[in-house]
Image 1 (tube, rainbow, N blue to C red):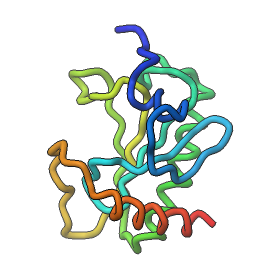
Image 2 (cartoon, rainbow, N blue to C red):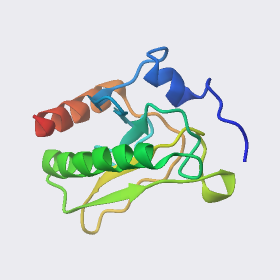
Image 3 (cartoon, rainbow, N blue to C red):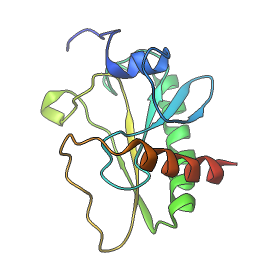
Image 4 (cartoon, helix red, strand yellow):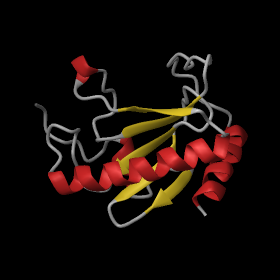
Length: 140
C-alpha cells in the first residue's frame, strides 16, 4: 500500500487550506458537503487523523468516524425527509477509492430514486449551501 499523502485534497480541507461547505466538526472528525453529490444532502465524514483508508486507520479513528457517520445519517434523513440512507466507503484504486484520505459517504435516499452518476460535475455553490443549511438545522 502506498504512503499517506499529506497534500491530498481532504487533508488540505481539514487544515483550512481549501474551502469547503462544513457541516460538523468535533475533536476527531470533520463533515463536509460532497461537491459532486450523487443526491441532495450527500456529505463526507473525514477523520482528522491522517490515514489513507480503513486498511491503515487505527481502531480509535474508525470508532470516531463511524460515530460521526451515524450522527450524520440521522441528520440527513431528518433534513431531507429521507426514507433511508446509503453509507459508502471505498479502499484503494481497485476498490473504487479516488481520494486517498479515509472518508465515508452519507447519502439520503428515497424509494424509487436512483443515485445520480458520479460524473465529476460540480454542484452549484448555492445549492450546496442551501442543502448544508438544512443539515446544520437538523443537527441543532
